[in-house]
Image (tube, rainbow, N blue to C red; front, side, top):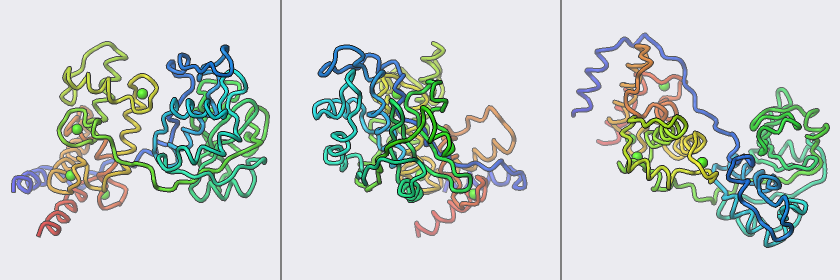
Length: 357
Ligand SMILES: [Ca+2]
Ligand SMILES: [Ca+2]
Ligand SMILES: [Ca+2]
Ligand SMILES: [Ca+2]
């Protein structure tokens, strides 16, 4: 049992009273589509108008819908495909009024509901303070809302301070004053450019395909885990700084794979957002304790947790110890006490010993 030997050695090498800061999972609830991403200035549909017909200028209804689906259940709706469909049914008329909410929401469930795992629970002319909207948000639903000349997404309601979690797909648009992802008061969402006058309720049906694509095993080691996400981050950094990196075993083959397979949010380029989406999926689709995501909770996971803990306890900030750091962050708190430490490693081992008898 090499693992047990490793664990014993590591355990004896460290002081268990040193505690690491509590690590909590990243909510990663943010937007999936920013209509100001460069790609969307080049995607246009000329069926209704040949001017101002790009998705950058008129795609807010499409992007807000796609952002709502991602917030709802982590599924990435392909904004181009949705737009193309909506253009054909008259639900999206770029340059001629943008999204036509009624044809769009009367038909979108039939077209995409099963694949993206949602249903339309009705649409209403009304205000953000409507009980039906607040109840829906409290029950885990999301909403696309219409404000003057624009659509946005609301994904949550905080009863304590009566604020709404709002996703703005037109990032860096100061005239509405909201970030991509923010909490806003009922007053804000009832005033001026952010006054909600109509909303549609969307609920999760659990039918979307939530398998992580095998093509995201970027380093071809048979597992899609946080090392693959870290490779995306490293590649983004390479592109940004025009400097090659050797982190996480980066090679030219892996670079090519990332460039062709890792644009998860379909915005035309590999960025940190793609890595963040993969991390959200890793978090949601693997069991706590299975930090390397090979569907077995065993000594490998315990070793990774312990190695990470040993280095972080020693305050070794250069600790790129296992390559699985972000996965350990998300999945390493096996005993759910809010801290990732040697007890998790030990409990993983106990669990493994019991389940492998
Ligand atoms: Ca991999
Ligand atoms: Ca991307
Ligand atoms: Ca494992
Ligand atoms: Ca723990």
